[in-house]
Image (cartoon, rainbow over all chains, first blue to last red; front, top):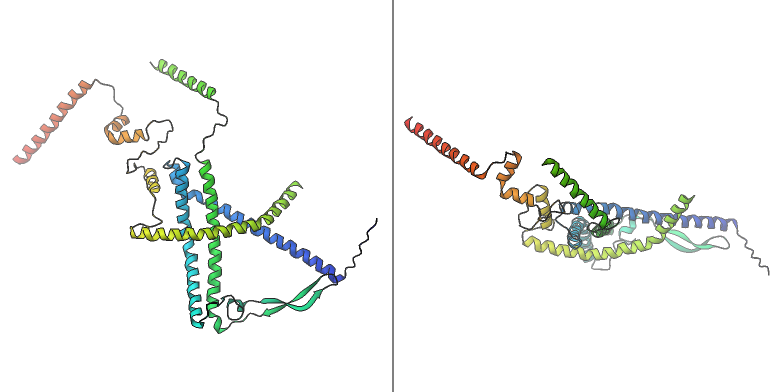
Length: 225
Length: 142
């Protein structure tokens, strides 16, 4: 049995497929790079966790895993609070501005990122039109510009709130990533710092070496006397 | 070739793990809000007790004292540097209680009978007292 599938791709279809493959590859690359950067950031922040607990471990003030975990959690959370209070304050300022705007227009459904009188007015925005583009096989709705960057007087709250919310969110997520990194590192340290290993330990050999030492010290004492 | 395939697979792993990573971070971000609120409550409570959230913990204070070469103020034993010693910091404790012994250790003397040492010390004390008396008399005369 022979199956013949005939596909007649036009020139524009071929171009579109090529562009689509490129876009997919680019998206995958961006996702991979983002993921790689997040993992790197977590590992980098984890290295800083040692400075939190170094002194108490070196001076042997803490000598067991449970005590270490409790101490490390306290220090880690305090460090997180110290790092996070600035983005939280920024976010609170944004919320206050948003509440003032809502109180003025008497509408608490105001979206500070909208494209009518919000932060979105200063960006290009696009929408799909009813017209089609592409070849015979693959067709898309055409993308058209919905909004050209411009500023309006009514959008003052959006211009303040929008950047504040974006900055505070990104900052806070960075701080959370640091918290995750430190937590992972300290958990690892808690399990490895106080572990006792018997790998390569042989009791009879150890006893023999102790006996040898005793003999050698006894001989030395005899010689001294 | 092996390296290239390995890096490709690693990249794919990063791409596949990306949604899980983002979801994990977002979940932790929600959890961290509770941590923040808990720390804020603790900060307020500590403020009214005259402390701060960032002040040193008991362990930090002990560690700092040890690093500065002092003995921790509370009488809790601090582990010795030697893992085989029976009592923690026994040498330091002994030196603190008997500083004379430490000074003797620095300038070792020949072993002498205990009685002889006592006989030697007493005349010295007397001679010192006599010297002080003589000096006082001299001052009165002047």
